[in-house]
Length: 85
Image (cartoon, rainbow, N blue to C red):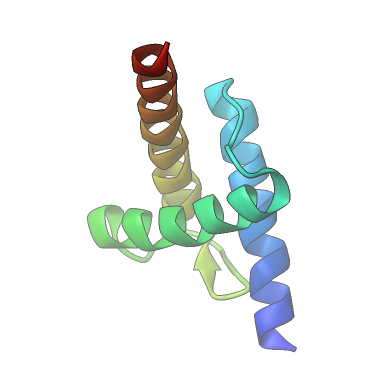
């Protein structure tokens, strides 16, 4: 049951990061979940474990990490799209 909760919270964090960054997360719902998970890891790595914790995610660092991730990934996909033609 904890994995299901983590998937839901990770998806919400990825979705919020896409809204805040003003960019689409490539991959839809799966992309949101992946951005939430990797953003949570990245945020905890850089900012540490602080703030409220929901579904094994510290919300503030996870959201900041996911926003950074969404911006970087969207810039990479945009540059790859331009170079193809």
